[in-house]
Length: 207
Image (cartoon, rainbow, N blue to C red; front, top):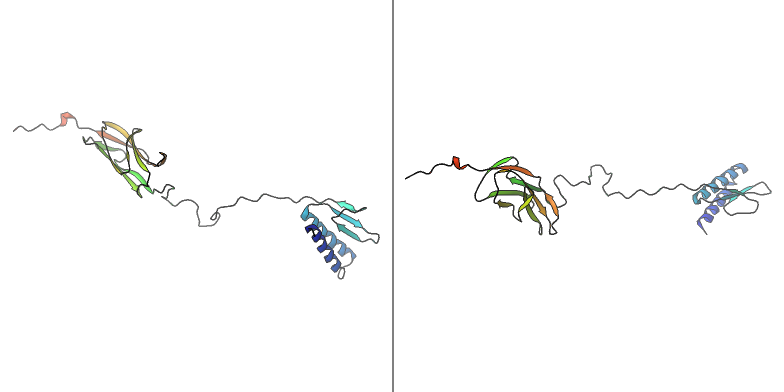
């Protein structure tokens, strides 16, 4: 038995049982309401049959002499997209915790020199120190840039930069993966390198 035939069969049983308690008008109203509801569920056409004895019958099967009752289609709506497990749950956030990064590095900054710091020339070179937590991942590399040019690279957190001339310079650091893609970088800082003038050198003491 098809679902719609089963629905009308149930309606017919209910109407038959209702004759014990309701008069003819109530039975007709009940039959019409149930049949219309069943027809609406399937969005099909119903048929109204008036028998010679005055009784009214409703069916979903076309019959000669029956009056067609068109039924409107049921309005449907697309299902909403699935939400994340924690979406909409108070107290649960899908954002990463403060300081947590997708690359796994919680801290990466230039600790020395500091921004706007004045650095005095050293013949051995200028020391650049980094703060990195946790340690460098396997395959990752640190790249030091001064004035936009790469001046050092490696896996350490301390580097000595030579041939730094007097004046104002910018300094930045980045972490690149094995493919050379930058996955984290510090903001650029500015430092000023000064050099003692030969005029200010202390004269040698003659023995």
